[in-house]
Image (tube, rainbow, N blue to C red; front, side, top):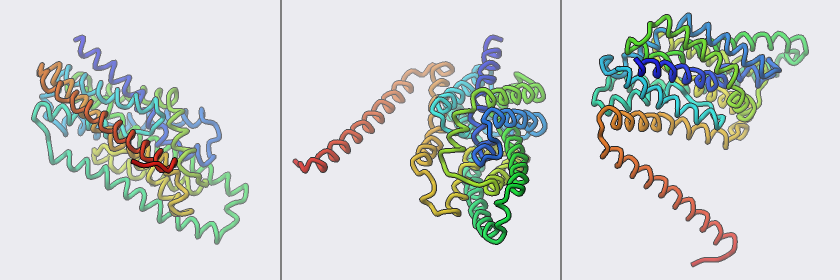
Length: 359
């Protein structure tokens, strides 16, 4: 019973961090384009939309997370606690850095880590999910790029769109579309927090979705500021019409995926759509490459980190296999050591070149 309560607490903590991370992906466009001037108002709208999306359409993805990756009979209270703790730790660290992180990736990574440790995985389902992690962002980039080119033509042909009255209408449109994108975030992301609990029958689907949706909304409102600022201001600049295109692309793709029960990376969908608009507008140099590079690295590393954490916790607390943990720690130390050594060598080589010295 204690493990059940602990699992519930971690799930709600995870839900709040999902809200903090998802805020950037779901309402940042409306804020970044100027349709919503206040950051507090943007986060409040985001929270309301996320809650409504969760309670009206979050069940399909929850079923996938709860029973579509590993056999449902593996999901005991202890295993659920390990899955949620691994995912929550990964996401919490990313939120502290202000990086928009895909909660779907880290949750699936945590579950896969458990499946590898227990040698029980639905491999086909995992490949399908992973394939859509690549396909959906690519589609988002392509749609946004093409629409960005169309917007350039429209702006040139109809200069009256820059007038104050037209801008007010466009601002309302962007806020509405942004609301639906946040709605889609609730549909897709609530499963990451409550799916394992539902799969283990520790909570009913309806109760889990309501509680999960509420805490995700609170996370967006109270903790989403840093990630919102990163996605809205530091990647590229965009107009109201461009912002509406980004939000519309994201909401359409994520709502569609949610209806089919597919957990997709909303942050990647929105961020790649922003990149598509930026490239269409002024070429590839318009995008802040340093920020993009940082985000992409976290995207790649995050599911692996959560996988390793959950795998290690299973080996410690379920299998009592200390030897595997020693190997993992040794690999980690060796990896960090090699990276540090490479960094030192590069710095030394740079110093020799600058000072005109050599060996």
